[in-house]
Amino acid sequence: MQSDQAYQGFRASGGRLTEEPLKHIDFHRSNLLGESIHGIHAFDKAHVVMMTETGVITAATGKMLLEGLRQMEEDGMEEARARADGGMHSGEHYLINLYGEDIGGRIHLGRSSGDLIEVARRITFKRHVQALARSLIALRGALLDRAAGAVDVVMPGYTHGQHAQPTTFAHWATMFEICFARDMDRLASFYERVDRSPAGAAILTGSDFPFDRQRTSDLLGFAAPLDHTMDAILSHDLEMEYACTLSVAAQTLGRIADDLFLWSTAEFRMVELPDRYCGTSSIMPQKKNPDALEDMKGLAAQSLGFLVTVFSAEKGPTGFPIMERRNTQAILWECGRGLALRLGAASGLIEDVTLHTERMAALAGANWAQVTDLSSALVRYSGRDWRSAHHLVACFVRDCIDGGLTPATCTTEDLDRSAKALGAPPPGLSKDIFAKAMDPLHFVEQRTLLGGPASVSMEQRVLAARAGLRKDKDRLAGWEAQDRQAAKLLEDAIDRIVTAEG
Image (cartoon, rainbow, N blue to C red; front, side):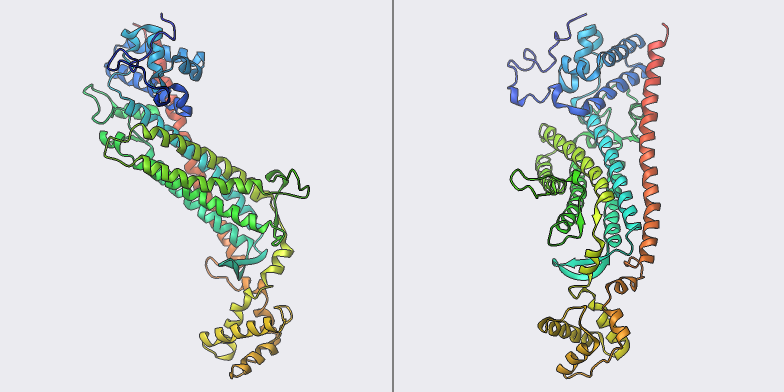
């Protein structure tokens, strides 16, 4: 038995190369693997099981290799691999140090750095997608809960940064729930493609040994093996797809942060953030800064940089971009972890943000956002065509502003005067019809059409969205169950080999 520092690996000088690599280009150190080390360890075990079951290696050799890998777990897998070093080949280093090359040197039979790291990369992507799905589900649930209690919380809707039409907080919240549901669909679609095993593809052509790629795929918890060995290793589109998927979700989160950021200012005063999401100033004691929102907005900006980096690194003839991908996987993992964390933080923020409902309601009708319905009333009750009605209301609004009138103080007689000034017959709307047309809450409640902000429509929207959320919870539960079953399948297979007699 050798010291766990004795074996320096196949990349050391004295083989093909006569000099050690420069430290800054040595990409094969174990401390650069991060959490993907768990996927590498699983692949080491699954590969040995498959080779033992197919007779590629003897049962005695398989038993020793698997016992060695379990001893590594007893020693602390991550720490043991770090000591052995060798990066993705740290399992081989450890086993050669433990048993010598005649035994330990057999674990890498028929494999390459290509399928070793691609298996670990895909397993890590799957775990990140599951974490993102959990955070998205929690955030969507929070949005639906707030929407259910805010179907009559009227507020201004904006276009071009100006008051456009009255809407409700529920309408706003359910819009973002739909956006995040699409993000979930994009993640699920990506998950289907990443949930395919490259194990056995080696670097691009596979192996001439009789490997059972389906068995290795099952032991690693993949839905199926990839059915083309070059595609399994050298098609780099999945990384670019994941970068896009993360960036889209990050931009949506950033937009929620933008809205709440704006609404929490003294000028808007529509919401107030819980203190735990805020910071203060070292010189201005009154400050309550929306630090968490700025953090979310910052990740949205950062994800765009990640997107460019990933696309640039993957550019090149087939098989050329290899080492660059070590950088892209690191930033994709960083973005995935960071986004899951911030989506989770957004859930608590949505749950506990204070809505200043009276302020929202006051703003909803303070700047003429409701007068689309005044134009509609002219069409209904005075026989005007839409364009003529629209023109009259536009002139009416201008006349009122010039005359110092507000939506709360103008009257149907003011509308008649604007009509006369245009040389048009006065519409003579009743006070009741005029008042309803100028009421932001009435504006909202009239919009009972599919997808509209009326309370009855919003209640239906929330119910439908909850049904979709339940399906996504089931989908996530299925992914997690698949992983648990595979882990048990692998450990049971190891148990059979290491306890077999003879």
